[in-house]
Amino acid sequence: MYDTTDPRASLASAKSGPAATEFAAADYLKFYETAPQADDAEGKTWIGRGQNFIVAYTDAEPGGRFSRDGQIDEYCVLLPDAKSSATITVQGQTEAVPGYSIVFVPPGDSEVVMPEGGRLVRLFSSCSADLAAACENAGSYREPHPNIPPFEPWPEPRGGFRLRRYSLDVPPEPGRFGRIWRCTTLMVNMLPQEDGPRDVTKLSPHHHDDFEQCSLVLEGTFIHHIRWPWTPRLDVWRQDEHEKCGAPSITVIPPPAIHTSRGIEPGVHQLVDIFSPPRRDFSEKEGWVLNADDYPMPPAAEQ
Image (cartoon, rainbow, N blue to C red; front, side):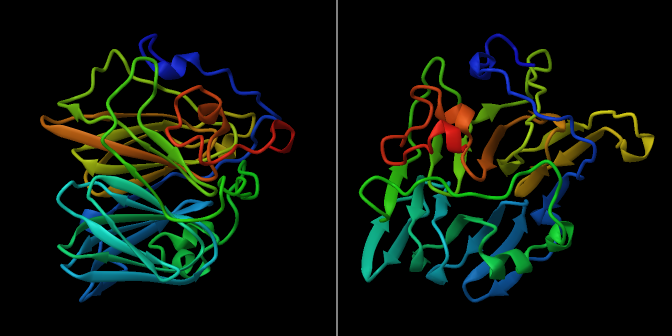
């Protein structure tokens, strides 16, 4: 249910399949409360996951190097701060990337270097087995979660795999929801910054039938409100949750839980929503995916 001013109110209703009969729990990973999974001369890195995606959040030291050898599929580098640039090397070619950018890195060998250090967010599919095993919440995914189909990547980009960089400096546009980019494995929505608490008369409780959502908090403090459906089986019911999460943190919201999030304190709030594979409903909205010309959708019959 969306407020009439929310662009998502124009989305077509989901075509529900059979009603879900079992449900996974949400995961709340508050990186500011836990030890990093890697802590060395390169920086501190926290790693968490959903069923289909992995988030590696790093406070990089100046000169920090972050390599992937034989990376199985395309991944994403998010540089959320204008002051924190990177150099990325792929297949022997090095490109300087300014801060406040999003980059999609092709499979194979690659290295990200943070000359001045700063915040670095890397996003992967869960096909990266070494990272999946290193996640803080790896135990939550020893068995596949219900209601999520097996992961299938989207078609290769037009012109083939290569480093693809986009600026996050995109002005808002009436009728467009956030700032959305996609690749073969991921969809990233850099939501607009909000100042102060969210208007509690314009929340957006909604659900997804068959895909999970990751909400990454970069700034501010949010409450994630999550409610699971009731079924005839009392033993699978779950209590409503109203979890307070600051920055940095990720929340993994399983389908088909109803959810909405709201900033609750003075100051700037910044969320990034992550999906894997990309969402078709967002992709079908003209102009919503900012790099749609680079990454084709799969045929509808195959989705």
